[in-house]
Amino acid sequence: MTTSEQLESALRDVRLGNARRISQVRAVGVGAFFLTTLILSFLTEGKSWSPIVLPIAIYFLVALVFAFGSRLSPKILWLSRFAVPVFDMPAVFVIQLVNQGYSENPGHISEFSISIFVCLLMLSAYTLNARYILASMVIAIIFEQILQSPAIAPYGRIFSAVVLGLATWICVFAGRNRLELVETVVQANARRFRLQRYFSPGVGELLEEQEADTLAHGKDCELTIIFIDIRGFTSLSEQLSTREVVELLNSYHAHMVEAIFRHGGTLDKYLGDGLIAYFNAPVDQPDHAERAVSCAFEMERKLVTFNEDRSKEGKVTIKMGIGIHTGRAIVGDIGAPHRREFTAIGSAVNVASRLEGMTKEVDRTMVVSEATAQLVSKVPWAELGRYPIRGCVEPLLLFTPKR
Image (cartoon, rainbow, N blue to C red; front, side):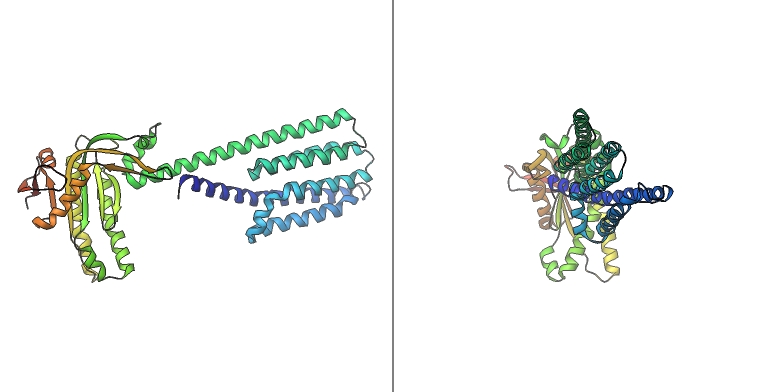
């Protein structure tokens, strides 16, 4: 899923969550008004408050339908986003219009209506949609002008429109800030996911702390590249079911990637039953060759444990080949704008792949180029001789660890 798709999904989830909150706030708010109206109607013996008890009761019942319906029905939840301008504003208008008909001071009713409309505008801000907020403002201004027409001077109606406009501007501004916050969080999570996919936790944390996006720019550097592959996987996969093949690869790769990350390596990509990893990018590692060789040794140990566990379960065991080469390559975020991968390209990567293939020819688990062996002198190497490698002008001197 691309970052833009993740952002759309996150905004949809936030808006649906907010729609549920709108329904809850509506039910609580209208319920509080209904309870207050009942109490005042009882205290005043029904002289001034009883006419609006029934309209508020109906409003409260519909609010409960939205509140509970939004939990049970996705359609009601989605439709509740539109409820403020098409339901709440008209309902408040009707209640206040009825209230004015029985009030000795209609002006007070219209003045109080402004505060209710402002609260509804704040509620509409939860939709995170400027169009809905603006629609609510227009409806609120129209209804407020009608309510104020019998008792409020023209300049008072102008001020009420200004107040509702300012409230709308604040709500739109707050909504945009919320959208920017969601976008920032999604982008940060997407970047963190990419770092976790390619880099060890330590390297990922280091890159995450940097202000500049290190992944966005190419870099020409010396790398030590590891290429590993399962021996005879094609014939092996024919003996297993699809589920068993997937289970085998997932478990195998999990062990290998753990070794890569433990030594600070970067996972380039999976190649079916194989994978490519490298050291010394994006973070400089002066001992990159030693890290790569140590990682390869750990991979061998992990494969032994992996096979022992499979053997105990009566499952087939596997063999692998490891090719290691040190050379210059270009690393960077490469690919289409919507589908990029942090990867290494160059002849050094190809040589590592060829060396892995040589493991079958020389019957060794690990084959290392002279360039790598010279940088890791602490390991006792056995010389295998010079072999022609496709893509190389001269035959390469190859080594394998002494056993």
